[in-house]
Length: 280
Image 1 (cartoon, one colour):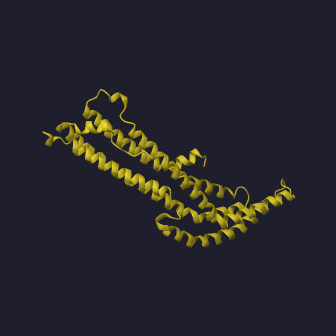
Image 2 (cartoon, rainbow, N blue to C red):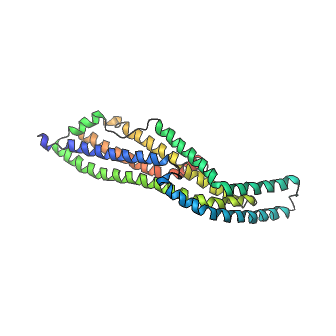
Image 3 (cartoon, helix red, strand yellow):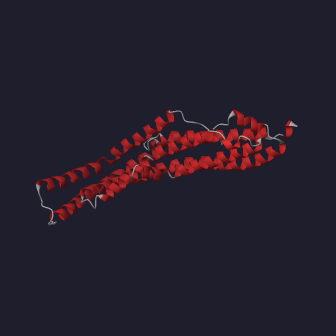
């Protein structure tokens, strides 16, 4: 009656779904290790480079405006004497602001490279891939007709969830690249506020914190995927040792899908996690 045993079909389905998810994870790691300069062959980055001079011109003009505003606010403050060190501090802010406006892309490229190198190191450390253990494979293949039929229906539904999660991982990574490329030109405007007083310069601080959280979001994504895959490959909980084979399969499928869903949630919230962890 092996013809009526659908355990082999369920096993092949799980293998196909796992291979698809592993391929998506490999694609995600490849993308996370890339800099926006090389993403999609560098085409989107050329667009950013084309509009960057416009924002630099605006930022350079704003540096003068914020410098005058900051100078006036400090020079009329009766509590602040215009000593040499005060004038030097104001001029230093002006120089830093002008440098950051003109070279903000160069500075950002260094952070892109750092984040990509960290992801590369994590990937080289032996990334765990999803797989079905030999013991669990034997349980799945040995299911009876009724049990294997129920599990096949359930496995099909859970497979759809896993496939959607795999696509969502790639979508989240693409969204990160879009966010990075959109905020890069705005850096020239944000850094121009450094030339003003400390209240105005808070705009540059806020921008820098957001940029760093998005940039190092890639590292948190990589850590989330690696950790979640290790959870799945750790096997079934110890309390399932005395359960029947089909029950173990049920636990296995549910735990697998639940952990993958957690992975997607962690990846989506990677920016928030990186911001909170680094105090950004």
